[in-house]
Length: 72
Image 1 (spheres, one colour):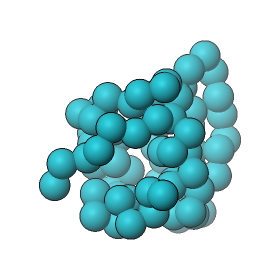
Image 2 (tube, rainbow, N blue to C red):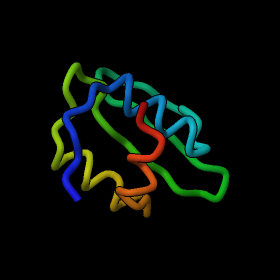
Image 3 (tube, one colour):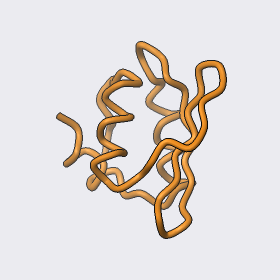
Image 4 (cartoon, rainbow, N blue to C red):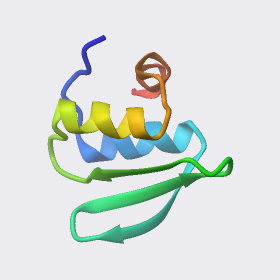
């Protein structure tokens, strides 16, 4: 499934709705953690690269379809 071009703000909001909490921000990168221990790090840019985001979602064990349901 192809990811749409999203902003860092949209990614942050979707991950928050999925239960992730921001734990660290340095430069343009945000680190978020879920209560079950999963961690995701992504760049907070105007446009987040699709392949970078897809890799981050895979590393955090988040299904693309579940993520896209939370994108508004």
